Image (spheres, rainbow, N blue to C red):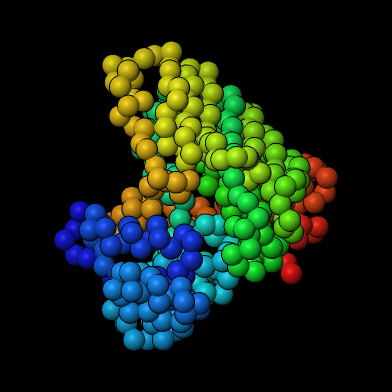
Length: 357
């Protein structure tokens, strides 16, 4: 990897920001974090003191006082992603935004257009693509070891109590957040379509079973892929008393893989009809322990972004990939709003409240 260190700014000092802060200050990637920002002065003060960094409550001031910043990470409520990215793009700096990219396809399009206009690149964080177990499975897929895909499924069985949604006034709202599908399980939805390919149509049902929030805490969806394969998506934050799993199952005509753990981080099953010598060691070699449901993917994700910028090559998660996920996500919400009606990715959004006050 190159010797040059890329200079970063961070917008957002909330819950997920620690993944950015720890990755950018770890010394494991050629990055230097030079300034941070959050509209909450207490949050930015705490992070500023912890990491010995200048802190701001206005990202325009941060960008103006630190023209050396080359890449800006955006880790703020999803409903504000579009306005922040469009604002920041005017500075001509590359931008990394947290998932999901936005709450509507039209917002994604405006974000992409703003970055193209200002000659900067936009990346969307989907760190689970960089988990060693997921990387190994993707390699097996690209080598044709699965053969014809039969069934793919993801399960998110996590725990969120009411106090999680009471941290801020935007958590669990239609306008700024969405529910378990848009937030906790959007990574797993991305993995499902990345492994199984284009979606022909889908149907979705949602429920709010245990939490006092506007949006869903539980969801179930079925997919038909253009290949003829089927998919299943199960997600809830109403698991009690603790987080159980974030998993991916891939079944093909020539082999099957199951990746489990809290954050799609442990290979639980790996067998193919044409075995290889390395298969016996694959579970130990490509599984990893993780401290929480976020996993350890932010560091390799940011390393890929830096390398892609440095070498002027495509990154694994460019904005267009993030937009693809939003076409699927918004269609799922539309299906749920229509009592499970079958819909296609990118369908007109008429009844869903996602992204609307």
